[in-house]
Each structure stands twice: as structure tokens, then as C-alpha cells.
Image (cartoon, rainbow, N blue to C red):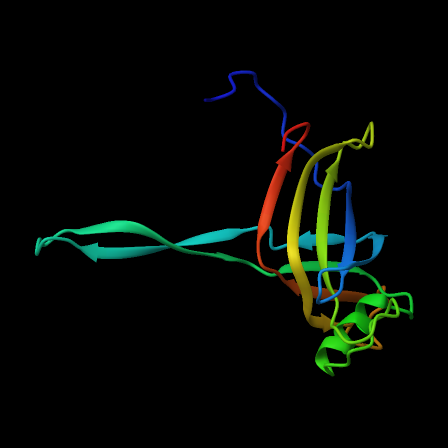
Length: 168
């Protein structure tokens, strides 16, 4: 059913990112809020598969597998980065996590909340399950530029859900 009440588009400059870390056994380890300059990769694709039926010449289009884009988070680098440590633990396959767990690599449920700039209330939220850091990058150094050092982390994940204000 379509909502006939017109709503204004939401601004995208006010958002919050929360990491709820879990061990490989699914045990909750820690929850952290972080702030970023930008977030991208809020997308999913459904593969379209052509299937011929009954020897006909026209193919039917059926829905195939769902895939999700990696989420990219960008922020200013302050010299210390838990995100870099988290990525390093995965890159080296070290089984000692930032939060003191031993024996598993940490995954996180990452929640991105779009906030109402005036009220601070959550307007929309996206949740990414079993997220892990597949890429980290820092700034390019250039003596001709005077820019803030930016770090970027890319997260692979196993699914995305979207929750509208007041709805599940």
C-alpha cells in the first residue's frame, strides 16, 4: 500500500555508526559508537536469471541470488585507530581481539542511523550483520597539499536490513 502523505526527503549529513562486536561463537564482546565523514555502499542487487521453459523461444526472468555491496566508512585519522587494529587482526589472522578475546576473529553488527538534524532522533537505520574489515586505507602524502589525513575502512558483511522510524 502506498502512503499518500507527502514527506520531505531527509538530510544525509547527520548520522551515527555503532559497532556491536561479537566473537566467532556469537558472544557479545563490546559496543562502540564512532563518527565518520561519509558512509557509502548502502545497496543490494538481485541477480536476474533467464530460464527457458517448455522449449519456447522466450526466456522467463527469475530472481537469483542477492548480493550486498561492501560498506565504506571514511573519517579523519587521529594517529590511533581501533579500525586499523581490527583490520590488522584479520589481515594477519591473529586470534587476539582488540577487546581481549582469544581464539576468534571478531565480527560486528554495524548499525548506521540517519538522524533528524533538529531533534537527534533516528529517522532510518541500516543494520549489517557479520561485518568484518576487508580493506583499510590511509591518506596519500603530498607536500603540495595541506589536507586532513583521512582513513577509510571497507566492511564485507552477510546481509543488510533497513528499519524505518518507528517500524521494524
